[in-house]
Length: 495
Image (tube, rainbow, N blue to C red; front, side, top):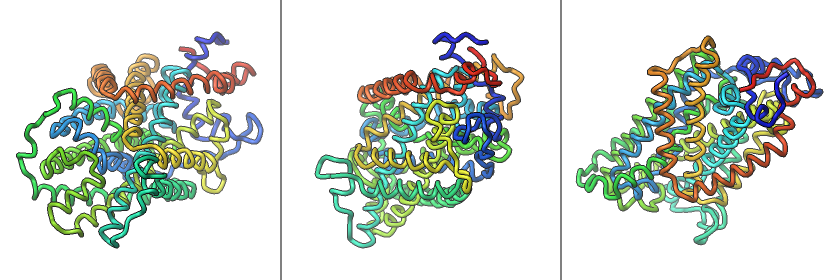
């Protein structure tokens, strides 16, 4: 029997074979009527390559590009283009690591599940909390920006805006963000109906948002002035780093792909392909949009500019209809991003509930739809509260911290899994191993150091909460702990 010391409990790993067996409905499903009973209900494999790629693209394009320039450009000036390149390189290195881990461990839970299999229960729980913070805060940040483009559309189409008191976080005359609450409610309603329906809706929205961004690039390039790119780096390399750190949350979609591991057809092939396709499409569009936007408008005008991309189109054309079309596209795009990000958070909660790290109610599935209904409603309440009452810039930086920590853990996990289970079947292997995983970690650490001090204070609060929950609940209710205490036939590994 494995040692039951605190160190051993923190380092115990969940075998890959157990993770995969549970994803197929075997083992001890959390939420079964009796402990050890088999409910027969599990997540359904209904997502193909295009739908999964659309999840990655949908969760990434729109996560930041529709509104992040407002905060990133004042930090870096025209050199924000380099900030996007740095963020894309970091995401690219990490995407290769995600592709290998997703093909080796095709289950729900993303980097939380990968950490549980490679680095142990303590690290996995910490990563799970980072992911919950990352997804919850990101969904809130995106929902906040929805109000800006909704107001832009209403103003152009009907000469009407939602009252300021109801369209922003408290302060500066605002009470709360009503459109953000409505958006979160609509998304949760769709997710409760079923993942297949949600994936189809998202795929259609992704096609629309790509067309809208291509339209923006085409219009913005007609107003391109090279003089807007000089001075190129007015705030120095430090500004470039700060902007890159802040906008990194725009690449959260790469993690979102892996949260769907248990609902994907032929996951060992589909997961890595979807991750790489998402990265290539997203990086190309991000850099083109940033370059076109900076070239069309002096960088000093971005500071505090609401619905900035739509405003640029209106300024260039001198007409309202291109901006109105773009605003509609942004409304649809931001809906799809919110849909995917909230979906990702519910699947992480599902995995943690199934493992006993959180109450098993988070892992209960509806027999009719196969979705975690209670889990989804709980996420909706939390995300809606953040979106209604917390300012956008604070939300964005907190999301970047959680994303960078999760990405670092996945890259380290690739190295650990190669050493501990070299013969494990993998549908994809990181090229240039071990250099690429090490570079991925180094780039993530570099971007973490560029975040604002307030972000680390928020992260410290999250860490305190995580420690309290783990030692107050999770360490005693973990399925591996119960297996050890009750001598259940569940295999454990001790790091």
